[in-house]
Length: 388
Image 1: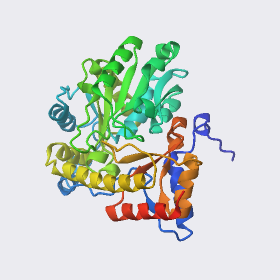
Image 2: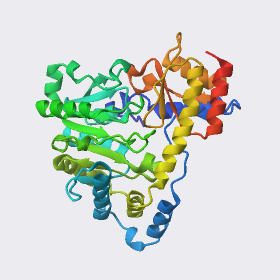
Image 3: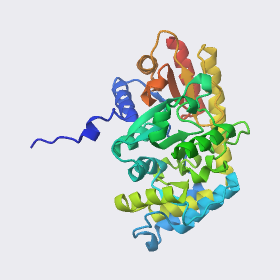
Image 4: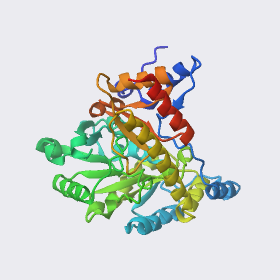
């Protein structure tokens, strides 16, 4: 039998982290101890009070049936309350919030509601690969907005050609940013709202790292900006804030028509998030937030150890104010992939090549603060010992 995959699958680049896993296993099979600073998957456990809430909910037969496609009202209401407490943003839980099986699912599905074959979307470069992949699956084309050091890794909206802006349907943004760890200013978000209004573009802001910030810094929400809710939505995830990556629970909030379009896609594709997980999510959002403070403290300590070690070696990077990523310039004579390979094969240290996030990421590698302090210190020693 001749099995042939679709053109949309054939043209996809290898998924970045799947390729990283392959390389890691190749090196590990040689007996090399690996320190993995590659994938951004928290190593900290989910807080106990959230686990307890799941246990109780999982034992209730009422939660064993199909959940709502767009989420329990109680969960969506708790999202609205969290937005009011955290950002001062008012949301209608019934019309302006949708529950997601992790924000990745919502990001990938949203273009199906608004992109027709041949349509254009504005996508940052470098970026989380799923923005472009979702556009491709919908038959659209991404116009890449370069994020460069000279502009604080914010897209230069004025450089987007007028014909491109005029036909663009969606714009993806992500601050605090993966992979660069950059943060957005209020002034930048205000310019985004003006741009979106002028060109009739739906803004899709991915704010998965808004609670992972340090040194007293508190990232703002795109929805805080006057007029933002009239042009777009914001994605959130409980994954990084509460160490719940495996639980697959997130949400989107904002423009009711955009939320409704995403909900319509979901009602035809999936059957919603497990209700017991949503109940645990309610506990996460409304419960004791000292676990979030503890998460920030731990990552700040790790950040400081790694930043100090990297800078002592002469490598250049900005001190991250948010996210658990370091965006590091590769030394002279190396490409992103070449330096990543050097660190892995010679030192057993896994990093992510910047060009894996897009062509504008060439010249950088990303490190994630997802191992404990001792392993981070060991990673620094290994890199020092192998040199570059």
